[in-house]
Structure formats: C-alpha cells, structure tokens
Image 1: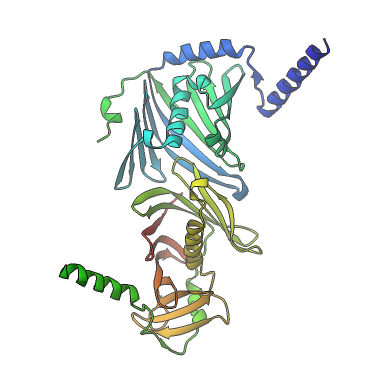
Image 2: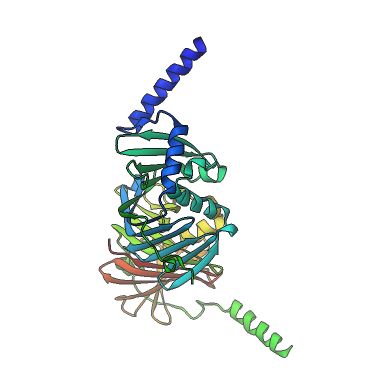
Length: 212
Length: 205
C-alpha cells in the first residue's frame, strides 16, 4: 500500500514537472493508445511537400543561424531537403543512398558505410513516417494540447547520447503531420527545424528524388 | 629506373629546399601589418575543408565576444556541430567543444595554427622583424619553432598573403579577400605538410 502510494506521488510529481517543462502540454493518457492512433494516422500520409526554416541556436554565443529551404518526402523512404538561403545545399535520401550537392561539388554516400549517418537518417524518416515511437534508439514520452502532440525522445543508444540530450517532435493533431523537430544538444545548443506551407499527399515525381 | 632515380632526386631536392633562404633583413616596422588584422563582429562563412581527399562542408561562424575572445564554431549545414573554439582573451586558446571523431591533437593544432595566422594572434609589439624577398616584404613573428610571415608589397600598403613556416619550410599559406574594410569576404588556407585545404566564403544573412 505504501509502495503504491509512493508510485502515485512520483507519477503526479513527474507529470507536474513535464507540464512545467512544456508549457500548456499534459502527458497523454495512454502512450499505447497514442502510439496506435499516431501510427495509423501517419500511414495515411503518403507524401509531404513543404517549406522549412532551420534555426541553429548557439546558446553561449547568443547567436542564431537561420536557413530556409524546401522539403519533400514520399513514402517509404524518399527525402529531399533543399537549402536555398543563405546558401545552396541539396541533400537527397533515397533508400540507403545519399546524394549531396554543395555548390558545384557532388557527393554520393551509402548510409550503410556510416552507422551514425544511418541512425540520424532514420530519425528524420521515422518522425515523418510516424514510426519514431518504435525506434529503439530512444525512450519516448508523449504530451498533448488541444492542437498538438509533443514527443520527447531521449536517446538511449550510446553513439547518440554524445550528440543529443533530447529530440522534441511536435505533431499537428488534425492530420498527425510533423510541425517541428527540435534537436537539443548536450552542451545546451539546439537545432529547430519547422515545416510550413505543408501540402500532404500530392503527387511528387520520381525525378525529385533521383540520384544522378 | 632512370626516371625513378630522377624523380626521387627532384623530390629530395624539393624537400630540402629552404623556402626562406633568400630573405634579407631590411629596415621596417613589422607592426605595420596590424592594420590588415581582420575585424569580425559576427560573420557566417560557407566552409569547405578537404582533408586527404575527404570533403567536409558546413558553416563557420566567427564571432567577437564581449570578453574580447573570438569564437569559431563549425557546424554542418544541417546543424550538427563539429567544433567550437575560443581564441584570445584571458585564457588564450580553448577547445569549447569538438566532436569525438575530430578530437585529435594533430587536427586541433592544425586548426588552431590556421586561425591564429588569420587572426594575427602572433603579431605583438617587440616580437617581429622585417625581411625583404620575393614578392615583397616579409613581416615575421616567431613563437617556438614556428614563424608567421605576413607578406606585403614593398610599402606595406597591401597584404598579399600570409604564411606559417618553420625556419626552413613553408607549412601553411593563407589568402584573404576583403572588399568591405577588414571583414574578409573569402579566405583560403592551404597546408603544405599534408593534404588539407580550407575555403571560406562569407554569407549574407
């Protein structure tokens, strides 16, 4: 009985702390139920076309590096990220292959040859596909408001703990699409990618993801 | 066989060439190069580094801090941080952060020397001398076994390029192009003791 009381107290305190940490958010009632509805709803998203804004916050330097571009996703695992301002940089993830165009320089990599790249690649795709809750590299907590869900992902895989303290993913409640991905680093810096002008389930031609 | 012998001889001669042998001491103020010292507020550069054939690209932020240090932060275009160095101030050079894969003495020392050369960290009163050579005046500042050379025209009105060398060999060459006062628009650094180049181009934010 005393044990049960203690667990109850800890749960209430933990819940209150989480609510304080993410203003306006409360823990989802059932993580399992959320997981099923999130996965099912995400399945309905076959493609995304969107603008994105990336903000790199260097906390100790009080400095923000902002870049903008276009983003495309097509199920199962095709991603194109095209940075357009203040520099030109193109990255295409096509299955296990990555194509990078940086100015006039072109580079092709197989993610199989780089385990860390493979993991980071998987985070992006899992977030968008709705399968991030099944990614064993993270322990996940979920929170909600009337409009959004928030996934708090804490890395458990050793090679990721050195880079991220947490990854926060906000999801639009109305269509379960990703609103933002916030990668928090261990030193206090973070990179926030937010998606705007989203178009879901439009036809995106193969050429967008073609690796030449 | 004869070709191999000849190639070896050429290589050997090249390796033994003293880059600074022909320099002759001349009168002049070594500190005249201080006017070319770059002044950074908070500048963002697109960076490309090539190390032994491997290409690494990203964004390099150079920012002057209130405590008189200069911070140099290099991250990938996607936000992933590679290193964060602090130069100057009370503590001198400090590694604030470096990713595990890059955390090697040879890498840190090479990068530190490169930025010290660009920032003119070694240019201090009473420590320099001037020599004459081709293509102009060599303003020299030594520290330990290394010397920073700032090469100007014959009247010290234009900085042509900078070099870091030992007493005999050129180790690093650095060029910067300024069109707006002392804020470099682009910089290029070439290492001669191993295959390592850095190209920086200023981004408008």
